[in-house]
Length: 347
Image (cartoon, rainbow, N blue to C red; front, top):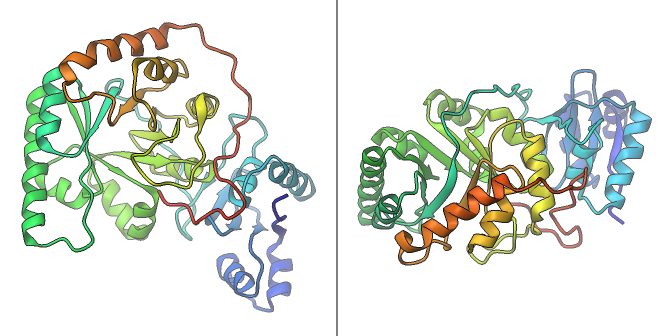
């Protein structure tokens, strides 16, 4: 069974650590002395410190005793400490707390009306490929060009050209484009949207995240766990991606598959549009994902070499899934990280 985090008040934590500091600093001291996971309880929020995530957790409704019992139960279900601390806050399966990105309190999500459904969402690695899926009729696209270990001037020039072309082609087609990772370049060139993983967002720091939000670009955020979902919501993104729904070879990740049950839970709980991603290759998987209530279904390899031929069946599957009678899903999510030997999660 997973190890129980230390749970106590700030006064108790200070006494244990032997320092009169803020909750984050006391937690760092206790971590340095061997306490692997803890939650320092407060009136306006609890400081969570675990191997996978740290930050202010806001929304606990239970007493300290009841909270500790709920944490123990969540650990027994197989959740790692970070997710156990999140799920134990919840008074109902839709009562997700908020988690800060740093030491500033988390922002309350802003419910903005989405201009349209994301529908089929093609993730491509070049402007040429993007043009093909636009010509086939896809109207939500992501340009994902990963940075090599040592990008030189030629690569930077190539990237600039690809992003500029993708922006122009998407605008001409009336499509919604999200540029993966390269958000400052995307902003400079006039892109309307970006997609970032959580490790990238963490590395930006408070100032960088504020700059990103002030840009006005629509933001897509990856999420794979309860703590990542609780954290993503505070940025009021255009959408939150839930994945991997099924096992995927596109990216090397430590996450267990979400399955349709977790995907449906994300849709009920996120409070904003959710997209499904990971292992979605054929119409049957598109239909199944659409049945959970997702706003969009991401296709990485499933459009094949000739998107014009494959798209009609995928579009039909999307509509069939949306009109199917909703299945009965479990009330609570299952774990998404194996506890034993789990690596530090990457967004």
